[in-house]
Structures are given as structure tokens and as C-alpha cells.
Length: 423
Length: 172
Image (tube, rainbow over all chains, first blue to last red; front, side, top):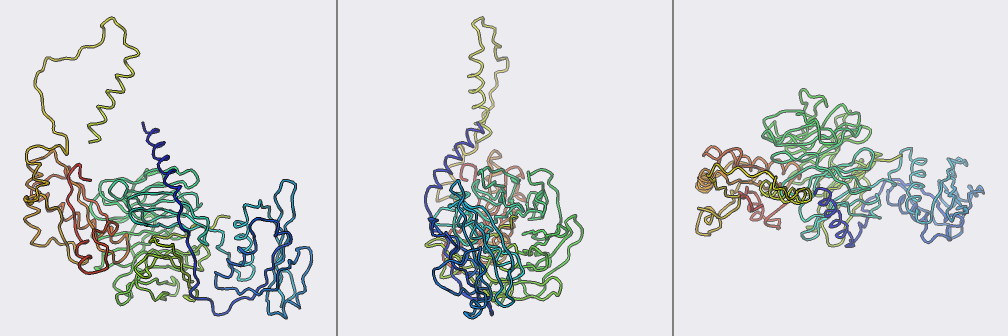
């Protein structure tokens, strides 16, 4: 019976997901103060591909707000030849990427590329990777990651994925897309709300809260197979799942013993144990990347503030003090920064706290920001906001300079979560 | 409903299985009918004595919503008679189960609002239990800001969305 039900559910989902949906479009609304001028000509033999690679690289780098592209015309600079670096320098470029696609017997290619510094007149690095013509976007994102890392010293985030919820009319879709908004696919379609998606550290699963049974229940969903399991369906509400850094546990909020309180359970739903106990609301747990702490929101002091508690339990320490409403703590992957939402004179805005200096900076000037999450390299923060009464996604750099907006035509987008870096 | 369906379904399945193995010797076990008493069970959601009142617009029992002030989970005096009526109904109909859904307006964090909606559902549950309803009859859950009854960003709408709804078996 259960198997039959699963088959039915899978069939319904498969049918529903055939309905096409407009993809996220990204608009850059602010850029870095100084940007690297780079030259990225088309690769040798790239014209043989149905869809290009280097336009993906250029779009990624340009959208990051850290690079400007200098056009030197339509001719490729083959990977095998050292380009005229002085000449490139003369055109204002600080760096040049050259590359070739070497055809292989089976119709695939070997992509070879090199990055040069025109000022110091030296090669910064070279790489090669195999690709099929259908992998043009994937390979483009990887090459953009390589260029970004060589020139900024930080890992790129172009080959990561994001998850978010699209509401159009009565329909809710949990979608997964590449970080540039392309290649979006629906993981779950429902007529009831879906909130709080959280990526497993290996990027293969999402935990989330679905209201499909008329109450909040926590599921873990394997993206490749569509297989789902209920990990918390206790009496009352089950919500706010986030993964431990080792992917073996989830911190969740349950009301089975009364108020909304923090619990930890194994990723298969077993071994539920209470983490903390307070006389008020405790919610929105998030593990520190070293697994030592769990940050969370609590109104135990009268107004919602951010606290942290040792992952093994014990006393809570208050983390935020500045405003009367500070919620949704989300640490960066290096553990140095904490993004959260603060109510600043009636406006809900993205703020970042430097955990070493205790310095808080408000990064946005919008009024309805929610659900911040860091890119794996800590450089950008993805969040939900509202523009013209419609939910959109936006991203801001952790220094507040670079701003992007991601929207879907005629639909509400909310609850974004930036996925992990898969190496 | 699930509880009642499952035994029925199981007996059908068992009958289907056993039919292949039964022979004609008449050796199948005969039900023990020595006890003749019959206890009537009314399935949850079945219209019975007093059930019509739940949907009669002239009955207070057809009203299901308890409203709250901003960022508050205190039951206002005007909700008292409504809660008393539902508590009385639950006491008189111990087989009836209730799901209380707490709701909030759309401002602020979704998860924090989910917790706030839970507090609203909980205070309604506690009030009903103080008046005699039992723990086993009531589940309080939260929908947070996710199921607004009213969609505009106006104070009237926000007020309409800050509420707890009392639903009986078969209504959710």
C-alpha cells in the first residue's frame, strides 16, 4: 500500500513538474568600488559548440561586481600561444584568459585554458577539463571559479546552486537553480506552503517544512531521486530544520512539549533530544561551521534577539544587542560573520555581525528583508525582499557594495538558501 | 478517519488472501456471538446529536476564529463566550477532535511568526482545557504567516490574519 502511494505521489509530482516556469532573471543594482579589467576572448574551436562557454564565464564574472570585461574583438587567443601581454596591458587589461577546445574522438572536448597577469607579465595558472557540448554552462561556471580565485584570492561561487520557493496563485514550488538563476528545476510542487529549505552539507539533500498535511512537518528530500522522508512529525508544529556541518544531525524546532523549543535529531529522524529550554520562543537554529555552537532566535529577554548555545547544551549567551528585533542568524562558512535580519526604525533589513570585533553593519536599505544566507565563499548574502508588493530574491556583498536582484515574472519568490560548494 | 478505515481495509485484504487458502470442509473458525451487546461508535466527523450546530450560522459554534492584537497572544474578553461554547461542545462530545491553527500577520521572520502562531494556538487550547476539554482531543499547530485569509498589506488585513482557528475532525 505504501509503495503504491509513493508511486502515485511520484506520478502526480512528475506530471505537475511538466508545467514550465519562467526562470530567475538577475539584475545588478550595485558594483564594487574597483573592478579587475579582464580580457576573455572566445576560445579556439568554441564556435563548434551549439552553445558557448566563454559567454557563461563573462556573465558570471561581470555579475559578481568585481570585474569589468574588455572586448578585444571576435578572434580567439589559443591556449597554446602566449598572448601579447604588453599589448593587452596597453588596452587596460590586468589579466587575460586564453583557451582552446581540443576535439576528442567521442564527440567531446578537452577544454584547456590559461590565465595571465599583464602587469607582472606572468602566467597565473592553467587547467584542463573534459566537457560534452551539453556541459557548456557547468564548465563555464568552473572556469569562472578558477579566474575568480586566481584574481581575488577567494574561491568562486559560480558552480553552486540555490534553492527557493516560488508562489504563483495557489501553487507553491520548491525550486533549485544554478547560482546564476539558470537551469531551474522544481523539487516539490504543492498547494500548501513550503518554507525554510536547508541544504545538506554535501548538496544532495534539502530539509524543509511543508504544510501539505495542514500543519508544519519537516521532510528531508534527496534531489536526484525525489525521494522524501518525514524526519519530524510530532504533535504540534515541526519547523526550522538546519543541518550540522557533518550532515549527520538536524537542529529543529518542535512544540511537542509545549512552546517552540530547540531539539536535535539524527538526519533519519531518530534520536530526538532537547537542546535548550526557555520560558519563551526559541527558533531558527543554525550551526556554526565548526559544529561547536548553535545560533538561534529567542524572545526569552522580552524581544526577539539572537543567542548562541553550545551544540552539546548548557547556558545560552546573548549575541545581538543593538535593536529590539534581531532574527534569523546565519553564519558564514568561515565562521567569522553572522548575517541576520534586524528591524531598523520599522524596516526589516539584512545586517552582518563581525563575530571577532562585535561590529554590526546594516547592508541594505530595503524594508521587508527575510531569510539571509551566505554564498559558500562568504562574499555574498542571498535574501528575500519585496519590490512593488512582490517577493523577489536579492544578493548583497558582505561589505554592502555589490547588489543584485533575482526575480521571476509574475510570481512571488521567497525563502532562498544558498547551497554548499561541492569540490 | 484513518484509524477506522485501516481495519476495514485490512479485513478486506485478509479476506482476499484467505479466500485462496480456504477449503470447503467448513473448518473455518466461527465468530463467538455469545455476547449480544452492541456499542455504537460514532466516527469523527459524522453528523450526530448537536453536530448540525457546528455549521448552523445561527449557532455560536459556527464561529471559529479568535483574534489577537499585534505581537500578542492574550485572549481578548470578547472571545470568552466563543471559547466557552466550544469547550462545552468538546466536553459533551468526547469523541470529537479539534485542530487549532494559529496565524500571524506577514511582518517579520517566517519562522518567528510560526512560533508566534503556535503561542496563539496554545493559549486557545489551554483555555479550552481549563473548561474541561481534554489534551487528547486537541492539537494546536501553527500556520504562521503562510496562510493569510487576507492578502493586502493594510492594518485591517493584518488584524484579520492575527487569529487562531478552531477546526473539528473532517474540517482540516
